[in-house]
Image 1 (cartoon, rainbow, N blue to C red):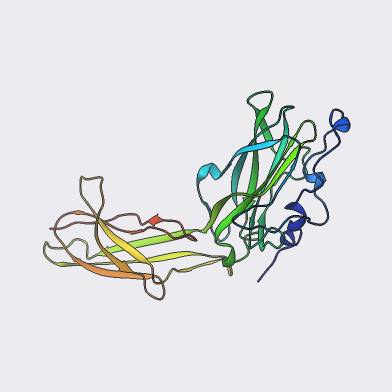
Image 2: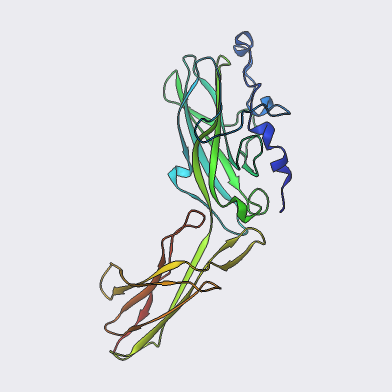
Length: 288
């Protein structure tokens, strides 16, 4: 398992226990969140029933949105940049906010982390102030199959750590404000033959369901998965499910149907926790 250097540093990034600054200093200079990351973590281990919080003063986090509410889907080579929006309030206004995605059993011992790309900037988030007390800070994070998405063990549910700091130095930290999913990119193909075919004859429909493998950065068949064979009549915009079959030990799909009318065949996969739903591009068959 290729644990990257960024994972080794995550315990400090996940617990900004030194985040607060004295109010007297805040008026002159409020340090950015990245500079306040301690060298060692003091975070309380995460439990699903009671996420560990740290609060100083009256700063509050009111909402967090990851990737526009959509799952984060990562292939084998390309980076996936996405935005986390953190809305927070403080009577003296919001200075900045800082989200981190982490994977593992507890915040002290994560086995994966996705950090903001702007750690070296004066501020981590790009904040829009809707009022004197409230701001939404948007932060870009990057999931990279060459670095922080280093193995299939990381597919599935990730937790969202988030911190916010007010203009007066007040702050709040939530170790697991919410969860999101990081998934292995999926592919699905279909081929219906023969083309053309006589009405009443047999059509053989083949295909393959595959997904990204983050252990070797290749695509491999997704085995033993339920996949629907669907048909769309020529001139229609709606697909109807004809039957459900199971991918074999290499992800291959194969079944037969009786030719009845012109139209498009496709396979459709509903997705799993670790792998997104995907539809094959319809293959047209001319029935004569």
